[in-house]
Length: 193
Image 1 (cartoon, rainbow, N blue to C red):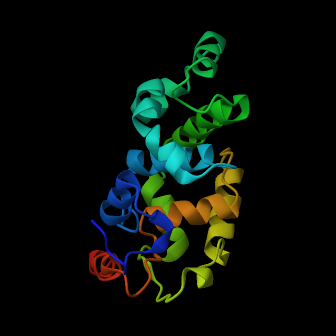
Image 2: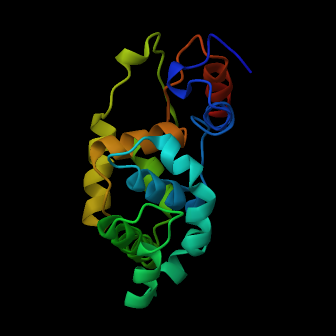
């Protein structure tokens, strides 16, 4: 499992390494998978991603597998239930964020706009292939993440600032920010062609 060329951010935690090697940077086009990931990235605000990654299964169970149709019907009792759930981050703003994001997702769909099409349009529907050698060179936000953030906010989404959105873009393969010496850089590059 020890690979000195792997991107340094994942360290040696087996869960993090698995995420780096099999998820991060791989293009995702499924509407619901993208919705889940965007919501989870919002939950990360102020925390490390590994904290959310460790709770991902708890989040799926707590939020009906991120089914927007179910989430928009959450009432006050369900919100209080979520706020008492030790398996997720119990922050009122973050709980309400998932509900608002579900409304935004459904509003886009009612307008005939697929979530994947909406998101990928900000990068011309093709992954941006970066060629970083040092992780300190990787940006935390870009013009594309700022544009996507503004559009998401206009559509009713919350916890979607440019930095959160850029992390989301990295994770879902909209940008390939694996370092060039990382074996995953080439794999993600080929997946994006």
